[in-house]
Length: 385
Length: 184
Image (cartoon, rainbow over all chains, first blue to last red; front, side):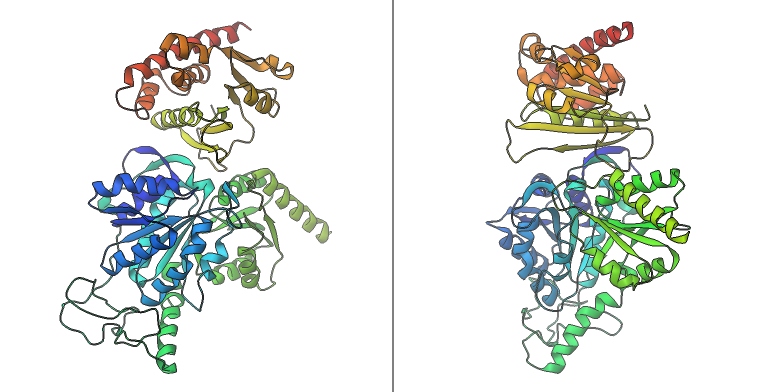
């Protein structure tokens, strides 16, 4: 580990992306993600990469997909309004299996909303924003240090599963400055997509090898010609209307994520061992939860925190097991209850699942969380009597 | 210094956020835990501006300032607005050109920050660096050498002498204020 440096969340996102091998950024700056574009503009040319400010957000992700099809690790960054615009092409990247990373620094919506205020309102959009049944991976950081580490993970997952990965940041962490000890580059695990061993003509470029989850596609420009389409395609890459082929492709796209959940899902538990009141949260909200849990413990309330790091796929088994062990769950998020739906579904009624949320651009404070924990705790004590 | 919560306020364009970043940078060099953030409106100039720094000996959970232990105000609007929200134990540093609200009289110290920037340094834009010097002397965040390093990391090339001079002017004023507070 190197010496600690003061870094902003957005800045750490860029530094981590560079470490992961990002060599192209294309996008359209928007608050509160703007520093990502700014830092990419400065840093990418120095790393032999390319920064392009596109005419809009749609072109931003389109350029990213194009670069990635040519084998370049590529990223775009935006906020709510731009994330809406990128949805169609996110679906295209899902179906064509072109890896890319889309950073969404969430801000208060809907529409242009409160541009400088924090929110976590894009959680469901990260899952269902693009149409059709499609795979989704979304990851959310809770500190500047974790921003650096997790953006690398986003690139790795994207390369490994050949799918777009959403890095779901929020304004609280994006605009926060903290000390970060940057790891040695040699110590980082960097994953690169698998490619064919030879550039020989291949009539079945989308054929998936035994024991693998995704096709080994040759980067464009390497001498192998194949067809890329957003239509359902067979192993040749050309469109097909066959129900059988459609089923095979769509199932595999979902299965490559669903059946590798253990590899993809990460989370963080804090004082869960004996916890009777568990706050489930993610992103910047976890910082208030951490303080609230500590304060509750000082009052003698057995509180804990379950922090989602991978938001999608949702850690349903982990929440199911948590519901078995604890007395009550409190979901805290800066929206009107999006992850709440998933937690309730996963807890299957085994414990009460309560909620605290905000949609006015203000942040949830540790005091507010603590009050909610206390209310629940003492209500439960009264029930027992 | 268990957990200090600093709130720096003024108007957009005064370099309030940069002052907060430099204080956080100094805390990092001094191997303390720190979290720095800001709130601002969509407008880039004018408008009330608030930047925050938390400095702590232990890891920081919640990253926003809730109960400031120190408040600085460089405009009347910011002083009137933010001084109302703080506890009696919060030290307030106001620019000497401002009128101190009655409710804040007991806890407020003043320093001619804006005047010194104009008259002693010759550049009003150095007010934020002067403020950094004053604050560091009042709160003892880092030693003088560390603070110089922190300033040098965040200023444009070619302005080193100017900014270090501003820092030293601020430290001088801060030293005087600290003595006054001790005598109080």
